[in-house]
Image 1: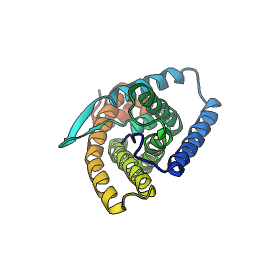
Image 2: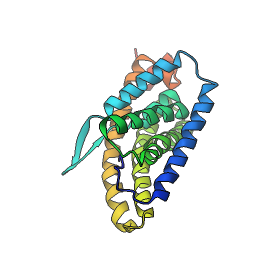
Image 3: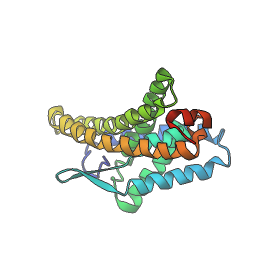
Image 4: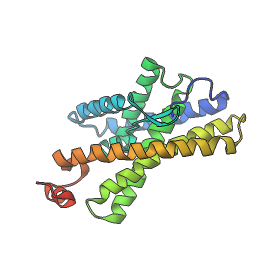
Length: 221
């Protein structure tokens, strides 16, 4: 899903991405600068390291195509969407600068697609499902659905950005991109739910659960 340099050749598209990314990250910095507690900073650093490492491992999905963990929803559940947006922006920027994973001219678009949309949209879906279901165990269903959506939404945005450049019609871009990333989204959902299950076992309070609720979710000790 990382867009390389040259794929988006219309400056209006990637400049718009830069503006949206700068606005979102700037607001997140302003918002969290007033609320951030000192003890939260190491947690954000650990989350960034976890997501960064997780994105380095690619898993084959179909012939010649692989996918990797995105981690946007996982970060948003544990940190909140705005802090998760900052974490994702740092991870995506480091990958671009250190590994050339994603182009420099389209860095803003990559931050928007995977960082801003990945955290904000998916966390909104997660929040709605949890509130509607009401059960503590619903967090795993909500996380799986929202994690899948984070990948598919990012793929839809990439497709839209390619189409806006005017060189390819939507019919040639959207179906393959969404079809492939729907499969990658299943991987994302599985890893996210598994990681949250580990957190639930050792620190249910990070998920907004008390130990008694965690035990009711799956027979905790």
